Image 1 (tube, rainbow, N blue to C red):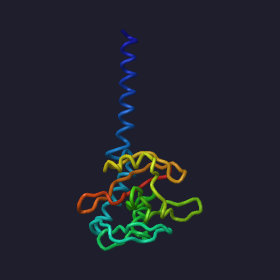
Image 2: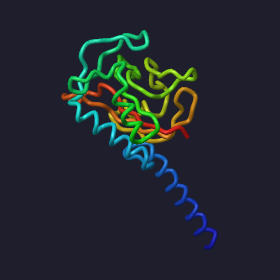
Image 3: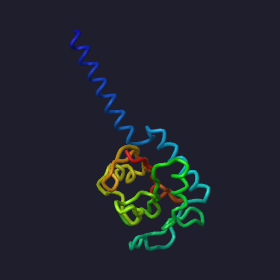
Image 4: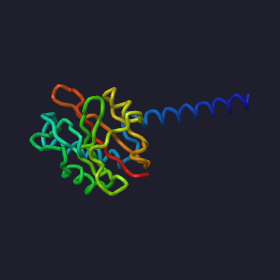
Length: 173
């Protein structure tokens, strides 16, 4: 009887651990810093105006759609992401949907050479993209340009509820 109760406790703990891991990767952030930074990014963007796509522009030599919040163009503009980092630390990015890819058009994530990682894409085989393709947020640990981050990704939707980009916040692990 004791062995059976121990086995049940182990199974219950394993299920709880698995559930916590799964739900940490969708829905709501488990890290308070991620929640604070994401709320800040979304709030400041909303103050600028509704998100929309209009025209195309070159970002790091790549022709991509231009994403706006109100009249504020995000492509190659760093005011929004730098403001979030000034208040919440970490990193922040605005991605635009370009075909099947999501391209960093405003970011303070750095490449190895110290430059901003604009023009780079969200890992098409990564954990975050799976949730975004379903129109859902993703929260969890991911590798960004070879480094581990605790992150949050949330779809940016236009007035018709189409996903046109992604809000991202993260902290180097």
